Image 1 (cartoon, rainbow, N blue to C red):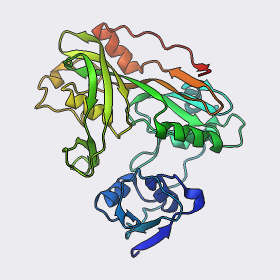
Image 2: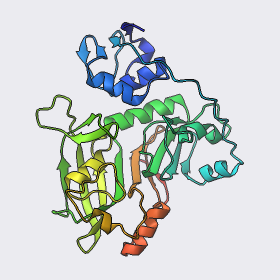
Image 3: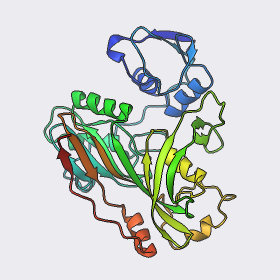
Image 4: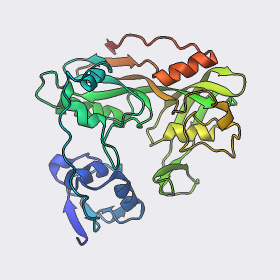
Length: 333
């Protein structure tokens, strides 16, 4: 395939570039799209762009030669709601109405498929139709090993409104994390730009240099809720921006890597990291605790999610006391 140019159509307005690519070339991976953008092989109207760039009708997208598509995999059969796996998915539901479904996503369940990922939430969504004409749609993501609140839209109109809310940052997100170390000061704001890049561990997020043209501003507010001596702390994290792996890298910048985060922890920064988690579950201790966002039909929806089993175990071991999640609320505001 040679270099080609495609024009963005009216019905593709405001679509993210990476999603536009996957719509036209389903076999291409997210990492390949990001690499094309980072190296300038993909351009819009001749300009370098990021994978998250929003498109406008009439723009010309430069498409480089693409890698050959992998052999087609047999389609995964639709999940039976009455199967054990289907019932387990039903138990994850925190809230449901005609327009929205909110889940407490288990740690370890990928949101979408990819290389080596046979089981993922996106492949299960037909089980959550509940008689509706439309298949529920993902409107945001959580990392595979992050648990907690995940929102689904039950139709295209709801999906558009919810996606707009996430883009405009009119939602409020709260995460809980158990980290190695005790931040100083115990609460504050992290305002450190990040960038995505390749490496021997695949695509990763890095702290960017001040003058890096590929840097994206990332802001997180944090607060220490409890601590076990100076070795382990329970943090509340409020991301004000939505960069990939933002919380994980910002905790490293805080000199308090998240327990179980072997992708980003820094042994040279905290040599006691391995010893600290001796006897504790060796899994990522990051949980999307709460989300408050505009409901597509008006008002605000506020949902909280209980901790996953491995974090409950760690809390018991360390003597941290987490309040139970409040019942979901839809409030006029």
